[in-house]
Figure (tube, rainbow, N blue to C red):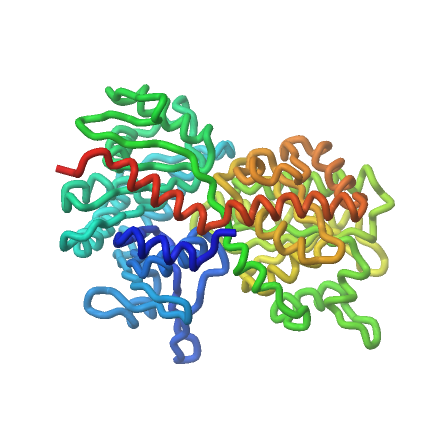
Length: 508
């Protein structure tokens, strides 16, 4: 299995400098009780990128968000991230609130996000949002240009839909720079993308990259069709290369893996329950004498878990409908099955997200009222909080099932983390996974469902809960092998190699 240390040696052999650019930071500073603290995000893309930039001893450029973030950086907006196995520089970009709101809550997440996901949420188009988006992209580009000095070969690795204008803003700064982009969310069909007023500017900027990768082949194909329909390009289908204005961009798909070693290291003693243990205690009421509440909860129930950001793309309402249908069709499970939905707060300044939170609460209350028992049992628990990764992995390891009903998802790392954590259990849980999550093409031994078909999801829940131990172990083991073979370090090396190979001629 390819490891962190293998990737570290790979970067040494390449003698290449890495500059990683993404909206999300790998570290977040906060002030609590007049004390400065730093934490690693509980999830998201930055968690996957952190060990890669550390292995390269590179520079990570991300958006600072708090006053504490400002307080710890030097005059160049940098500070050193240090660990026992390596270090790197984190450089922060700061923007005024008005620009930040237009860039993040506006164009990124009310225009590009719904446009790219097939979730039937209409994108909104406002000139002032795009103006703010452009200004913040320019701030990132300025931070990058400050680092593109000297003659050493540099890989500028840009991430995702928040950074689409950055490539055109830095393309001619240094001829020794190779520019790659990874697109983490779905790329829509041309018929959808064509409605975007700023489509040409965004596509032309992205084609300033030498290499662009998506999670899945159909997403790369959608991108190729989009540029072919919108721009005067020449496409070499054999090499998946786009020729545009004397520049060549190679397009491919490269599914993101997880850090399987780190996930295994997080599977700590169950006694370290933390905040998750407190929530479990509150769910069961008065615990049995001399019995640990956490153990009691899992001993007394079939536990189905869901872990998501608050987002309409995750199919959370569809999931509750499917659970309701399951209990209707299988009344023998009433009083025995509990769904614990961990819903991390996200983008609640956006009206559609705040509305979704209200609808989830109302639906959960409706279902609980329908099935509540005299002993206080209820089927649905929604926890709107952020838990540390130790607690989440501990919950995965004990759960009987993980239910993922994404309407559309570029990858979905939760599904992969659950499989790995569950594999460390004597009697592993089963994964019910939406066919519209990118991970469904990797985790083929999961129970794959159409989340819009509540009857199909209901049947999959029943099958997963009643599956015999031997079959579960076989399915989980098969998926773990895939995860080990395609982990995040292998993904990073393949991206770097492909980026280096893509630059046919040096930049002018």
